[in-house]
Length: 161
Length: 290
Ligand code: FES
Ligand code: FES
Image (cartoon, rainbow over all chains, first blue to last red; front, side, top):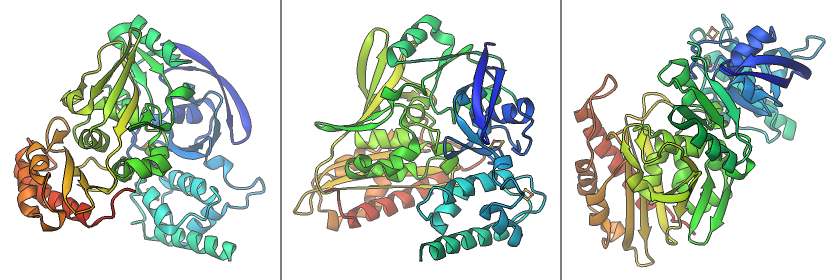
């Protein structure tokens, strides 16, 4: 029942809000900050649609309370492409390889992949695939997504060479 | 669904956390990683009146080698444990078990203390703690007490933690040089609860003889269960000459699986037996800890 004043940095901008303790980070992003790119599928940690990056790592925003994100640095799918609209390389390969259809699950997949490719250690295809087991997609049959992951891994090795 | 309303306080230190727990009593719940608690709140399976958040207590996170054991703070996150050098060296079964806990995204928040305290019958950490002979260190306003993992689990989701107490750390004893540890489970999809799973630790001396064994099952009883008979039978045997199917059958004899929509008792026993044989075989073929 308690209300809390919180301040979080989301996609580089500071949001100061008052939230009830029971508000999840997912609802906070969508309802209090109008950032509706983060999708809510199951609301109890099963589908991965709500995945965002908190302090550099991918987490399920339906399993974190907004009040726990006080002082945190949050990144959502709105903060992934460049200001001029140029897609992030994760978004670009998903686009090229038909890694999405309805797009409901996509923000979650994007955020997990962004967190891994930006970690700076040339994440392997295997590790990306293992991390994607935390996401459900009802449309694509996953093949396009896996092709996109393969492409990301190849880009990593070429970048290193 | 949305959680029912509750109050929330941030504990600034372990002392602060336990004095809050003492103050609020039975209706308070500790929130660590929240990866099981928040779904339970959302489904309204849990309706605490107040959450005490221990996420900001720096002292609770991290691993430390201490004489004869490895101490892991309650708030140490699962993905940290998976990559921790000390865990890899002293308790590789814990690192291997972590790969099977939830998903990458939940392991970024989920903690060892939370998983040990929940006592979900099909989860990996409690069985690993039991197999390796871990000690659970509990804190309350009144002080500290330590209880063996083997005495900690009373029933499904029911542990020896009393009102006002919280897990402070989990201590994994050092196993002798040459100990091989292996873990595996059968689940319908990666990250799902295990239908059956087993953790095996075998201390093997220079002569190839088994000097100590620890075997813990998950998903095979209401609590993590110890394969006492198999552990006894293994000690003194030559690792190369084990009758593995017989040991696996002995291990299954100590389980009390249940029927549910995912698997029957018979299924869990048959598949569990095959899994036990596979994991023991894998452990025997491994290079033990240095
Ligand atoms: S909405 Fe968060 S995991 Fe499904
Ligand atoms: S694109 Fe429709 S759910 Fe994945």
